[in-house]
Length: 148
Image 1 (tube, one colour):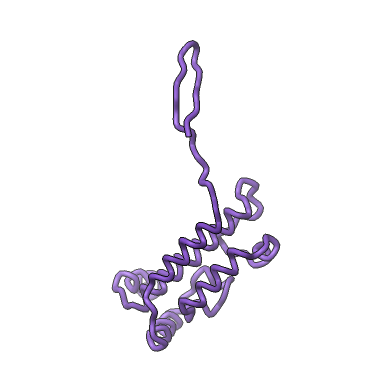
Image 2 (spheres, one colour):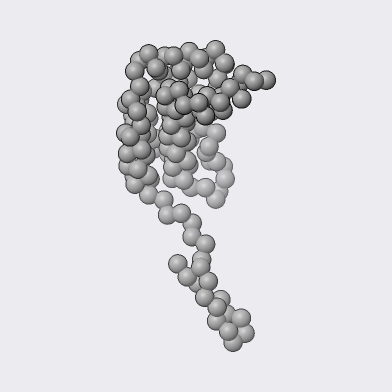
């Protein structure tokens, strides 16, 4: 989108900074597609990664959403994304996570909803990388929890 700025007799055209147009339902669909493409892990892979993370006293920022997150399966994450997408604002405020800024007047409830959905999806992707034994994912965890 363009704007015009007038300086004396000169007219300058410039690009207006655009606030991200937020359609939470489109975001929800996109995130569902992303999660659906992630690998399905066996119960053994899920439990092995969860056990290792527990031994390291791993804590992610989603514990306020669900303490059993490290054992979530794909269908659990899809259900959680749907819950967030359809929850009323009062419910979201009552169960906030660190990514929301409810008292910041510049952040709308829909922006907070989108942040939460992105956050949950991002954390699940990290968890999938750990379950798939991707060395880079475990390197990050070991650096944060083990190497001290």
